[in-house]
Each structure stands twice: as structure tokens, then as C-alpha cells.
Image (tube, rainbow, N blue to C red):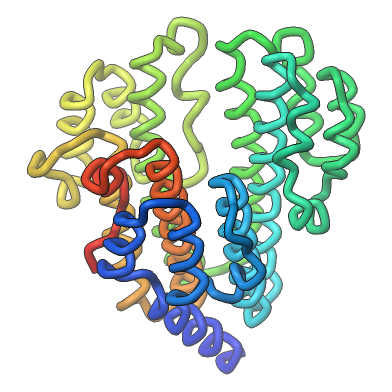
Length: 345
């Protein structure tokens, strides 16, 4: 259906054209209070509809909730133009939201304050979730949580940790187990596409996942998780351009510099250089942003353009969240700016 495809590409690019620009970020970073941020978003950006009913005394958490609601509403608006697999990506983001809520609840449960989850439960997401979040908020043990999640895609991923969930070292294992649910979902969605379109989608996902895998390797090495499990178990096996031999080399690095050097000898060599290196996380996030920005402008495949917009929209919301957190902690605009990605255009 060429008309539908053209519509989703046009809509994605039109929404991308309404993104925050450097002047917006400068204004937001120089805000004195979270209320100033809310006021700016409400009156001078494309977030105005989502913040229309925002009051003058919002917490950073409430701002984050409104931003994530804006993301889901936007994704729903764009994906309705697309065929069934495209719409399934909206479902993918709902699952991602579910996992965020599960991990947030497990955090409160592990520190003995499960009742606190009710204070941060997002009512909007409860309407769209496979989980009854209000029922989850009444849970007081891990096994009770499993009962709530019994008929969901998350039950099998969480069940093995029932006896050890409150061990801080297990938190990352739980997170990884739930990530695998998302990876499987993404694999199923992509498998519905064929030929050139599927190849184009896989290229974007592979680039994004490989950058995430690089950071995972570094973080797991740094925090010593490799002493207990194989780091390779924490890497997305479906979308990667690394060969098995290259993965082995990456797994045997010990520092960020060694990891960057190893990656520069792979198919990603043209994207990596040591110039302006701040941190591995910053480096890979900027590489992904640069790739997505290029593809949304020049790629002619509608579903790829849609996915690039989704990822770039998430990045923009992350930037705003970082700004509100920075203002709450009274960080300077210079410090806040250092953690933002893609604010110079």
C-alpha cells in the first residue's frame, strides 16, 4: 500500500521537524525551576498538548510521566498509518513500558518499601498495560508479584529469581531476563518483513543494539559481573554485525580504550575515532544519534524512517528528563549539557 507507506514516512518526518532545537535546549537548561521547564514545554514546544493541564507545582517524576505519555501517544499516532507489523511496534513500546514498571516495583520491593510504588504508579499506563498496576501496587512479596504476572510474557523471565531477588547482584540479571523478552518480541516483528525492507530495518536495529552491547560489555567488565556469569549472555544475539571472533575479542578487553580500539577494527571502524572522547556511554550514544539523524533524512524506506523517528523521540525525552533531574539537583547548565545527546541542531 504505497499511499499508507508514504503517509507514515511523511508523518514521521513532519513530527521530526518539530523537534527541540539548540535554542530550546538552551532555554530549558537555563531554567531555574522545574515549573519553568513545564511552562516552556507547555507554551513554546510541540509538547504543549501533553502539558496543557500541567499544574505549576510538578515534580520531576510527574514531568517524566507526561513526557512518556507524549511518546506513546505519538507512536500510536504514527503507527496507525502502517501495516500490522508497524502497529506491532507500538505494542513493543507498551511492553517496554511494562518492564520499566516491573523493574521500578522490584526496586521498591527489594529495599522493603513496596507500598511506595503506589506513589509513582502512572494511571495512564495502567490503561494501556497488560499488567494491572494497581494490583501490582498492593503486592508485598516477590511470589505475590509472580501471581499478578502469571498470565503475562514476563512470568517465566522472573520466576527463577524468586528466592534471590533482593540480592543487589541479582538486579541486573532480572533486568537482562526481561530484556530478552523484548529482544524476542523485536525479532518476531522484524521476521514479518521481507527482502529489502527487512534488510533496511535490520541495519538500523543492528547498529543500535551493537552500540548498546558495547556499553554492556564495558559495564559488566567494570562491575565484575563476569566473575559470576558469561557476559555474552547479556548481549542481544539477534541483531549484531559482530562476528563470533570479534565478540570474543571485545569480551577480552578490560578498559574503555581497549574496547574502542577493538571496535575500530570491525565493520564499525568508520564510525569510531578517539577524537572528543568523553566516556564510552557518551561515545556510543552519539554514534547512534548521528546514524539515526542521517537515516531519517535520507533513507527512503517508510518503516525505517518511522523507527528512526521513534528512537530519536525517545532520545529527546531522555534529554528533557536529564534537564529536570539536573535542575532538581541544582546542577549548572554546563554540567547538564554534558549528558545530553543531539542538542546542537
